[in-house]
Image (cartoon, rainbow over all chains, first blue to last red):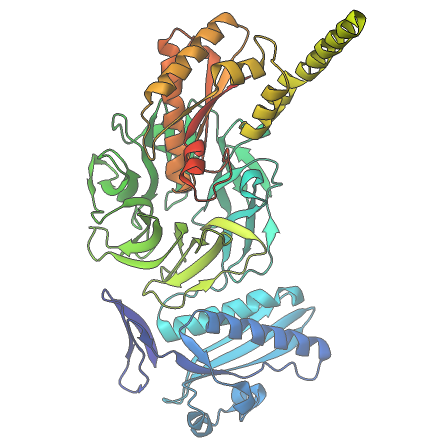
Length: 432
Length: 170
């Protein structure tokens, strides 16, 4: 059976297998062999409506697995069995000839007013079933069914949780540089179901999703763009509420891992310091007091014991890590240039950041102690990284050249599979 | 002949009044969008010598903005001079409150530049307060790099125009 994609620090990706398996993936810088997978077109059993849904679900699964870069779809024209036959009994010997290493089939049927989807995933070489699921769904929800099946396949083959059934919030931008419109927007990770959450009448910046993905904390400049304040958008009610007016500019909010409070920075009297805000009482607690300095963009570690942030207390913005319970914080960034937007990986092993050096911006990662720094992408203006929920990918603001538009891009943490995210216009500061 | 000249003078002064009339309102409107667009201000100022104590008077004769060096919050000597003139003007026209808008050029991150803009606006505010203006009359808003004052085409001049604290009459 196939288990666990393991990452070692030097961008080596290994697929560990049990004694029966003879399937191997290796990623070393630049060389990587994706897993060949055959996804037989799901079967709707002769019902035209089901046939349509089956085709669309197959397409979603195919797009998901292809886009993540870890899979190569075996050409469907060569398939030698239908999904129905695969579900009954795969002819593994024939699939081996096609060099398919994983095989997927699925059937749709009606269950009352709902869809019932059965699917199976097989390891062709060991001739074993890796997963079998039966999913019930409302007829309109077929995209999520496809994403959930893709997540299951991804997890069984890589050992990591899939992120296909997830959403991304970002700032949708439009208009010229001098007349820019900023709107809060949400979409599925593949760009489907795009929706604007704010009107664009006021400037909105730096959105962050809560750990349960039900709330968004963001900066809203308010009426006439003269009253910047933190807002909390509730995705369940569609309502936005103010997080209280106090002296100073509250900004760069980020949720604690339990969602009970925010860590943020407040700029007041020329000094920007870190604070926490209890989301129940709205009480603030100050965490840093560097005289004259800008301490900004704080983020908790995966286990909540540490904070990483950017500070110019040494002259230029650099990354610092401090204990939640106190301490001065230790600088962890030492290469040339300025460091911004640190974000701790949900796995805990890496910190993603924006680096600015000369005329170039970089998205990079380093270990929490500052070692192992690597750049994953660079260009005219890149900033605002966010981690995929499984810690495998980073999404960020991407403007490769001075004349190009500002869009979103994502890249795997070993630096491969860089791609543009599907958004309708321009955008920045994704939160995943 | 003499009559004609008188007539011309009268017409000229009427024109001048009508050009000056909408001026403060125009400027306030522009300011209400968060920043002043220099070409508009220059056009408004060129059209008329505006009445003392108006927004246009403040922009044209006092100077509404002070500039900063890249990634630095420190006031330059000419900036300090401008703020001294602003303080003197505000001591004359005590009915005004002001908002100082902090801006940054686009070669930086949204997050750090929001803080940097606040620091720049504060430097300007501190100078006004030191010159005797009541701090209660001065608000601050930082727009970071997200509301530029002039379009940034890559020239150093354009970047410079956006590293600025602009005092806007409320």
